[in-house]
Length: 253
Image 1 (tube, rainbow, N blue to C red):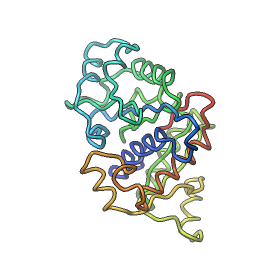
Image 2 (cartoon, helix red, strand yellow; image 1 turned 30 degrees about the vertical axis):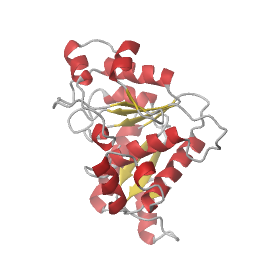
Image 3 (cartoon, rainbow, N blue to C red; image 1 turned 45 degrees about the vertical axis):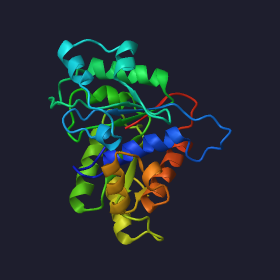
């Protein structure tokens, strides 16, 4: 999820899913986890563009028909990349954010959790009615933000919303476009106090690598694996896997 528009949540979602599917940090002999990536930003979702996937309207059809999606729907809707990553893209046509019902979203996530070890969900910034089943199924929430005052305030509000009915929900902060400092500054302490969370994850400002990956429609593991941003996203995947080992299906939003 993201604290404000343009915070970089899609970059994080796409590359986290890709790195998990690649088995970041695993030995060659260890099995790669099955990973699914879902773009639930029905209006402005760009996961498909980030991965150069063909546009489709299966989500629109689902909303129009009002049916509960089943395994057949996923077989038709999912795109599978060479590394095994399964992707459900947002619709090509503009759709109201409330076009889907909570039961439909719940069915999609439940089906994916039966198929995959990790389910990564990219959410819209707006908080809509069907978000409840997503939060209920989340094993971890990553909130992407910068350290501007407005973003930190939005981040605090988002955390309060996500945890008001789920106080035990693990919410971690991903600081985007800033390199991890060697020493905790006074500003960092103030932000951590305001959010009541440590700032564990940092993604450096690396526009050349980020834009090259987006322009080519490929994840950073292919376009710039040794770039500062590529290395940081690989580290985020390792941290996620360590926090949520493959003992049961996991959902990260």
